[in-house]
Length: 132
Image (cartoon, rainbow, N blue to C red):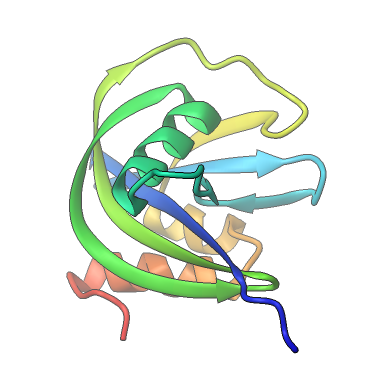
């Protein structure tokens, strides 16, 4: 019997930039990778609540949830994503889980993101489409 994948959620946080939208990416020292903020659902949470909480915990950004972008499979989990905009920014404190947060252009994000799934999410966001 195969174990069910964990359910998780996250967000593609964007803001207007001088030459197009900018995106939040995080660095996770445990994996030495750059990705979009995401994490597993707590018992009783909706996926939207999980996405908002995880983005806040990993970036110190309180966001408003926007359009759904669909779900992506990662090893052992399925992550549901939403477009998000910042409502309030608190001071980011590096931790063992996330040690850096950056605002980057779409081109920089595409080059920096470590996983193909994240680059596909960026393309879906820019195309104005959800994932299929």
